[in-house]
Length: 423
Ligand code: SF4
Image (cartoon, rainbow, N blue to C red):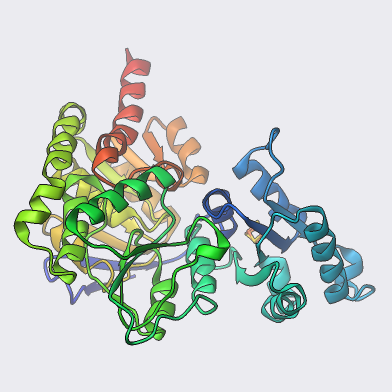
């Protein structure tokens, strides 16, 4: 284990830890991405384990035909008895014949497909050529080796960038919001940008395959999620420019995030204030009742979602919680610079994981609330800790002024439950 200072935020100490990790794989992202892109289908090329993971994470859809499935690599494929490319073509052809409403098909790689070195990018190109213009086929990896569960979204969005339409150097400036948001949250943000007078606003991913935004040197992009490093790199490769900002979590984060767009698009302060002031006041007022419950409570973050830094900032600054340790799977120093600068000085940040040591520190510090993945939550609850599943932070609409109280409530609820159990 080594101790290193974070250069971008001198008051923050970042310790790196390498050891056994407790994470879910990137296939998990399919659960929220298939709801967001309404004419997309996610075909995992994997094993029965992958199929079980997706089924149990997404639940069984009774009323609608699911828009995800697993093409299972079986013994015949592994033994080379079947031509795996032919098998895949056959599965995809049958799927598209049955489901003509699908306009965008993702071939999602997994640990098994990577172990046998199945080239899904080449397969996607081949199938796309054959099926164009009715269906576009793209590939990305959701493999669980050395990833976190939110990286599935990053890989998916990064795959969408190269085939997106291009906006030339003479195109008017446009704002691109990057990261899957609930439709209601997206609509709220659209209204704020419209009220500020920012006219050209797109979201990645779009709700339909045909509406993916045009990208070019006059595109300025705001990240709505902190785990989109590959997507940001793909956008920058096309000339788009990142707007550094805190993330839109809580009243303060949302204001700072919107302010970054306002500054880039030359919105006057008075117009900006006018656009956000009443929603910000409502958000602050709605937070008050949760603050009463959360204030002074000590919270410990295990590394899982990559949302840890902005959530910790929100809970410390707007809800009065005390941060014991912020574990993060990765620390993207540039994308998180604004967040790190807002964290209380001296808060311990641990990048990476050595789960046994972290469990020891957690037990020793006896926090009031632990934020962690599903695998750790049950054992910790059994030991008497109140826990919050970090995966809920991507399944629940939490961004924006209107959701600030819901975000605080996610953390207040386990404390309330434990208080009731202790009575
Ligand atoms: S991709 Fe890997 S980690 Fe994820 S379910 Fe499949 S085998 Fe497991």
